[in-house]
Length: 111
Image (cartoon, rainbow, N blue to C red; front, top):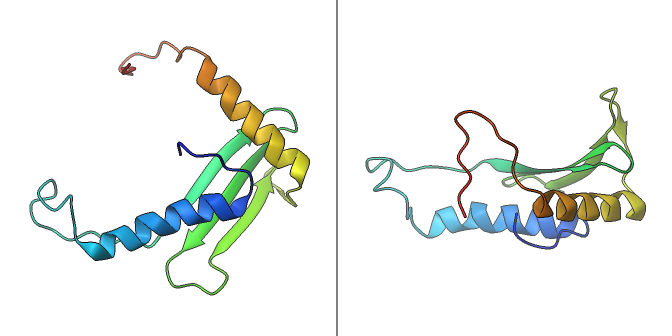
């Protein structure tokens, strides 16, 4: 995302900003040939390599209690997030950012 995500509120705020930005005018209408676009929601995902949990924050436009944060383990079972998992996800993201991107045919890494 490009911001420090220490809990669900910062991820939800970022996605919420994207949803509200669309209502101020479609800055990408030229790209889509004049069509309007409508973001209904979003999902922030980050893998915590230390606890092997996929951290997810779902947000839906106009929903009461719009942000739902949860983890998913390797068996696909939802788990409750705690401070250790959030910190592990942050550190995992930092370590991934420090690595060179993998060599994948068709993937182009920009500086």
